[in-house]
Image (cartoon, rainbow, N blue to C red; front, side, top):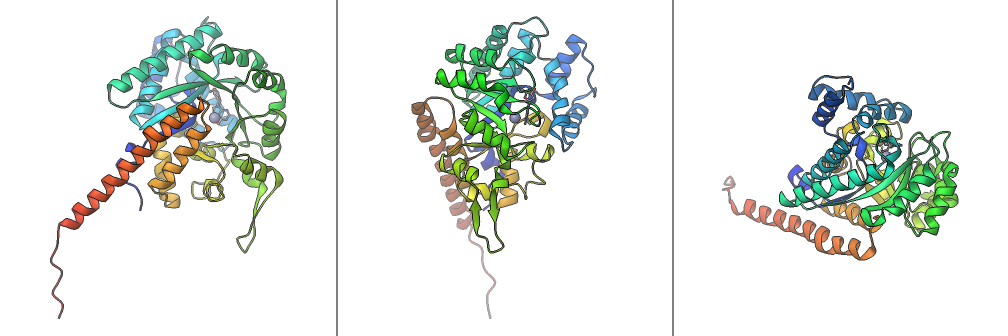
Length: 379
Ligand SMILES: O=c1[nH]cnc2c1ncn2[C@H]1C[C@H](O)[C@@H](CO)O1
Ligand SMILES: [Zn+2]
């Protein structure tokens, strides 16, 4: 059965891959840009919303990334960062997300004179503010942070140190992002070796715009805990005409080691990593029991939300609530917060949430069945 949109919205959801600078409200971009005199490509909310999705719809990661020029430009002051982070937490909570790991690159927020420490402090303040507003609105959420280093730049070791220094302040991990082709993860080996020595967690954007060599480096040279996208692992999965499946050694390793794949269906279509939702490898990877998770990547650029991603998957593959519970539990198993906290969220929030939805559906069916109709009298 296709879950209703109301059921999808109410279902507890978990998000591991969402960029702070890819999820601003269009109205906020307009207001912040007006305050600092930044020129935008559209003058009103619907126009700006449309511009972001259309410009990001380019089929190339490099062109997709140019749209961040306008979001990063308006996130250069303490107040702007607090506001954007608070709204991010509120928007995710309103969408039924109960736990999120949100990432951003502190090195991109220094042009207004903030230090790296100032940037982290402002974003954490915003997340705490958003969490408390969401709780007051009856939609509790926990937001944890990943600090990203840009792969074309040379500050990854410094950002890794910033992540470790802010572990107690809400930062739970590290990531590298930006154009993938030409910037292999091994350029940042120093940062990853440092993080491993510090017993810290990290994910790497790999296997999105570039294929298996990028995934292999991220795992076997750098030691990534998770793969940001990792969708091109499908290149190492062969399906014969008779339906027989053969995994190459890298795909087998990813599945055997339960390496989480942070799949982002809508984003993958925009950057050309997949042709359409119906053709997205998520269905085959899920059926093969890879550790698949569903994510938004950039809600503004993709005009999406966790609920929308789930709805698209439900339409394309007939997924129902048990499938969404499976994706959600997978995500929590893969989160960077401590094991006891992950378990508590699985057992006390996610499973009861899906059970309640199942019970509600059963009641609705009984109630519908209770309205007895006279069937036409047969001859
Ligand atoms: O999907 C992505 N792949 C690579 N880089 C990305 C993706 N989405 C966002 N970014 C970049 C642009 C942002 O400015 C940066 C930090 O969030 O990360
Ligand atoms: Zn991303």
